[in-house]
Structures are given as C-alpha cells and as structure tokens.
Length: 319
Image (cartoon, rainbow, N blue to C red):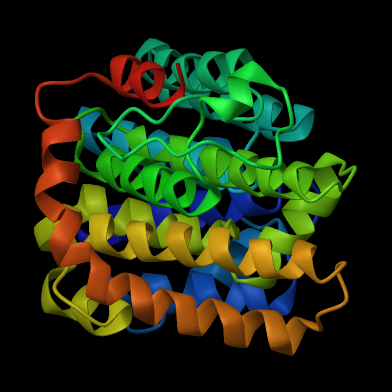
C-alpha cells in the first residue's frame, strides 16, 4: 500500500471522527499518533486539511484505486464511527456517502454490525449463565431471581466477559472487534444494576470514557493493529507497548475489559463517589492484575474463537 493511500485512509478516518459533529484536541492528537505509527512522518497536514473541510469524501475516494484500499478505508471509517458503541444518524449518513463514493458493496460490514446489534439487543444485561467454562456460583444478591441465581459470581462474570471480548480479537471476521465496546458497555450496565444503580446509556458511556476506552483514536489503533498488519511493523509495537498483531490485541482487550469490570464494581459499590483520578488508578491496578492472569486463560480464549463466526461467538457468550 502506498503512502498516498495510507494518508487518504487516515484523512477519511479523520472525517469519520468528526461526522458526529465533534472531535476534541486530545482526540485529534491521538489520531496523529496513530498515523505516525503507520510511518507517516507529518500526518498533521493531511489531518488538518480534513478537519478544515478542504478535503471531501469525493476527493479522497478518487485517490483509492484498488479494491483493497477502498475496503480498508470504509472498514476504518466504520470502526471510528462505531467508537462509542453505536453509529449516530450523522455517522450513518457519512458512511453511506463514503460507500457510494467508493462504489463499494457494504454488505459484509453491515452484516457484522447487524450481528453485534442483534446479540447485544437480545441480551441487554449479559447476565445469564457463563459460557466459557467458568464455574457457576450462586448470586447471593439476586434473592429469588432464578436466572440470576444460576449466573456466575460477579468476579467470574467479569472474567467471562474479558475472555469473550478477547476472543473477538482472534476471529477472522473483518471488524469483529467492533463487538468489544458494546459488550464492555453492557458489562458496566450490568454491574451498576447489581449495585442498585439506575443508569442511562450516557452515564455508562461516560464512565467507560474515563478509562480512555471507546475513543475514536483508540478504535483506530485497533484497526491499525488488526488490518494494516505488516504495514505498521515495529512502529506500531512501540505505540502499543508490545508486538503488533491480533494476538497482542487479545491480550490488551482482555486486560482492558477485566480492569473495566472491577473498577466499575468498586465505583458503584462506593456509591459513585470516586474521583476520575481514583478510577484511573483502580483501572491501572486491575489491568496489571489482568496481565498476570492472561497467560492462564489464553488457551481458553483461543478455544472460544477457534472455528467460530462472529455471530456464533456472540450468541455462545450471551445465551
């Protein structure tokens, strides 16, 4: 892939990140950092041009002659638009315009998103029996709720969901990891409910964002790691603190989900009184714990993903 094609994809990712009407300076800086990981020495120029309105979808689409580059551009834009767990009307309009400009059939991408939305919608709390061989422990707080009594303890449930989200990183399906954030949001919602909290979507999203999860640039990192592969090379390893690749993605996702669940548990248990700094410290501590746990469950995560489609894995993990 040429430098011009990579620059074009980054420019389209930038347009995608502002298609909902906003992008702060920190987010813009993170996109610049990801772009540099791809070997773009001065990505600020193309990103600034995209943000200024000087570059349009039609102009950028014309710079992508190959089918591979077109597909990668649309997948990247879709992932960025999906960074908060869903696609807003403005983002949906942007993606449709991009698909039209690229003359691209988006059925594969639409199918992935439909699988994710269906699985999450069918199981809004993700609170049923664990599916990956984690021991089932009666939930003492359920008090008579038969479904909850059959569910795992909260610790086991968090571990279960951490393994499930990690397994999504291992699937061959393009954009399978778009299912990670919705599952993380549902995990937080479920934990809040267990502590008697009545939460709306924005409250859950805000808490997840406190830990730096779900930002468009973070999702762009995942796309870079999963799809660009050898293009990023060792440069991406420096950005992520390890070897670039899907396996690294599974470890990072496992640690993030595990830490998110336990930090959220502490937060709701203490009546949502913890400061942002306290939450981040908790997240860092639990993420370090997860790093030590991952080698013990890595084989189980691989078994979860082996031979499965996105839809079958999501249904297995939430039934």
